[in-house]
Image (cartoon, rainbow, N blue to C red; front, side):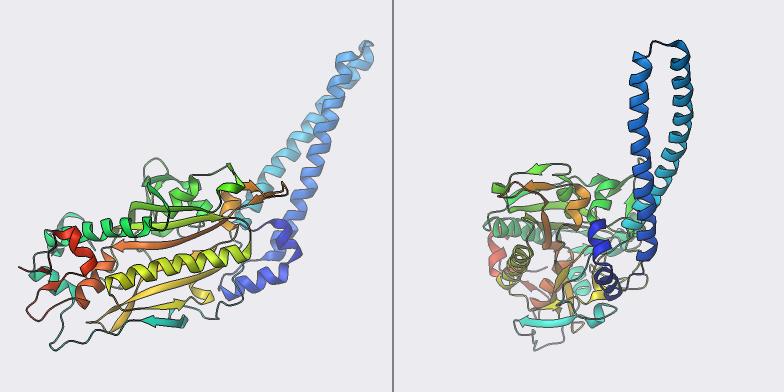
Length: 422
């Protein structure tokens, strides 16, 4: 959430940012409503102060007639105050709803564009895998090796359902355990997060109200998380951090759930786009400084790139255009892994920074060296997401005989097995 003072003083900048993100917002209506809010708030506060004065006068008034007059005046004031308080409550509801719609301002380096098709490639790593045989896709490879069962997955779960079996499950555990060991070398705090989370945490991260159709809701008006970012950001809600503890770096693991409501007809087969998956997430809280956010954003991205390089998976890094940024993101990189059978790069990691957009909603603060209260800055990036990551791993490491060569770094987690075979 942006500060209303910032919005008022930089209306053109905020409007330009919203346009770049292809988000419609009526800032003039918001500012007019804010004028009404401030006017009503001042009036209510003045009436409350006057009410307190009359209350004290009634308590000390000795003359019965004057005391009665003050009581009548108090009743009239109370009726007026109640009316204004109700109006203020209604205006505040409208004001908060509009404030939640105002997007963060993207960085100047973010390119123009309406969708991910216009993201800009900024670098690649590794040579695209070349085979001496016709490669198979991950569905065929995994099915042949009895690593997955999509048919029974659909029977039990429904659309996009799957069972990972045998070496498929073992490979997932290997990736999780390797990712844990790899990223903990970066001096991060390890965490397993709740999956059922109160809805205010989704408002805090910016997933609500805009992503409501993509969330699974419980009977108790709570939601299932689609990323550990949500509960991790809620961890310090309404707390003041010590400046000396910053930056705080988390490595968090969680099951994740997404309805994929906006992806009808996309990737209906395989493990690219499923309703439930598992993810390691990197989350950082740092001091409120743009240069610090940029530095940690690059650090998070480098971590993920080094992880992919250690697995030997070719990838590219793209800079997301304005139309492919979320409401709260200032800037985002995607890492996309090479998928040989399709001949395309597929997203496996996203690294974003938000300035104080999220922490202002969560009320996560600290006091700087001068003692001034500030909202911390927040960042996050995927560490490893499965089963999506298995797609590029398996397709790039497939062999002519239908087996899969195990990346060297994963072998210690698979009993030093070099190949997955029937």
